[in-house]
Amino acid sequence: MTSRERLLLAMNREVPDRLPATVHSWMVYFLNRYMQGVDQYEAYEITGLDMVIYEAVYEGGIEGGMFWTDGDMMQTDSWRVVKEKDGHGRSTITIVTPEKTLRMAVEINEQTAWIVEYLVKDKEDVRIVDKYMPYPKMDVEAMNGISDRIGNRGILRTHVFGYGQPGCWQDACCLFGTTNMIYATYDDPAWVHEFLRVLQGKKLDWIYGLDGVRIDIMELGGGDASDTVISPALFEEFVLPYDRGLIEALHDVGLRAVYHTCGGMMDILSGIRATGADGSETLTPRGMGGNVDLRRVKKTLGGGMFLQGGFDQLHGFVNCDVETTKRMVKKCFEEAGEGGGYIVCPSDHFFDAAVENVKAFAEAAKECTY
Image (cartoon, rainbow, N blue to C red; front, side, top):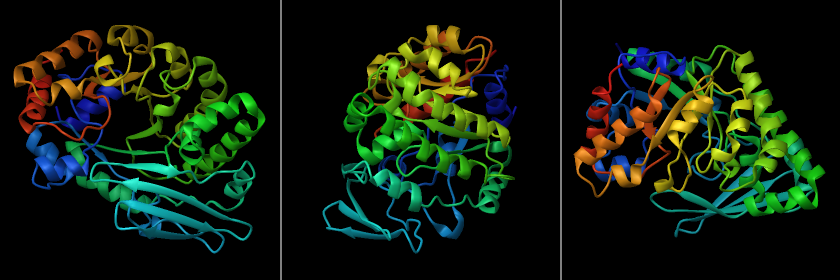
């Protein structure tokens, strides 16, 4: 069975030949530091994992992301972007519109980036975002070329576009701040709904422009909607209605969706199921700061969603022997693998790992047969 066949069977909640094993995506830091700078294709070949290529290519060569990229950001005559770097990892982004100049700042190191000044500062800024913020179009031809390159070796994955995160609530948190958003749900819930409707509208337009693209799975969601950040009540009111609408749109254009909850999720399982997504990730265990009980998640979500994640990369990829790694994989299989529909995967990104442990992760999955 090819990796593509194996992964697609699991995503259809069917039984493959053995447990599929992959990673959320390869971090450039890890590839450079531990794998001599190979690309993501080579990393899969070297480690023996099932290939899931994470890629997003937009028309005009635009990278699109607001704070995690050094590449060109989308601009229009009414959304002019100026990015200034101080040489010490800090970038100030100034956006000039016909009505108002917006500004944000990010800091970056060799591993990741974080926001130190949010773009949306006043409630009226949402109107500016609504009126002028552009969304880049997916380069369908380029994405289909990537799909052709992957072939039977695996699948192609990307995310619903957002300047911060794929999900509506999560994107708003990146633009306004998580704490600020939580306070606003109590102080001015009508404005929060307005903000979320604006972002949802832009994302819906983007999704309905994906006609003809061969993407196997689309990521939606984000950690700001986990139950270790917000309450189930806030998820029900401010996350579920907007992300569910995006998933319906993805299904309209023939694409699958996996709902990404990096963090706690045990208190919002019913909400995650209600999104209508095809799959659920990252199944973050307590050792990684989550709260997941894999057996319970399998019982609650496994009948209608495929599951991906559950592996504790902090304790299974570093400072342990390969036998420990293998035992952890087999434990995940015992708890969530029954009946298929499960892909073992680290619970989100990782930066540091011993390559021999990553290879052992792949080897153990090959021993988990149906």
